[in-house]
Image (tube, rainbow, N blue to C red):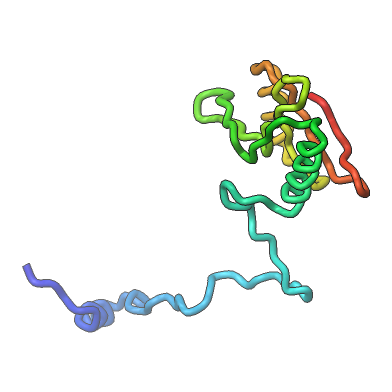
Length: 147
């Protein structure tokens, strides 16, 4: 079996009248144009697992203050992953053990909820015996929503 080079294949296809078959696609640039964005900023997607965003970092600092005040005994960022169904799980932002000893799952939000996130926290709250709380930065404090 003989293999043809690209030049030989192009010659045969040209002789047979196949147009454009020998042309290679231009892959030097992406096949789409980026939208006009004068600020030069684009959303980069979700943070890597185990890395906090700015809101989560601020909430961790708040929890640390609560810990020093004796109101929180322990907390862990992305420390607990709960199974909701086959191939579906929920990882809370913070597992928090307050001084009353009842484990809480805290979800930090910067003002925007994806539909699947709200559904997951509600399903988790119906399946597991923990307190589920969403917190949102509000001025110098935190607004709380219980599930």
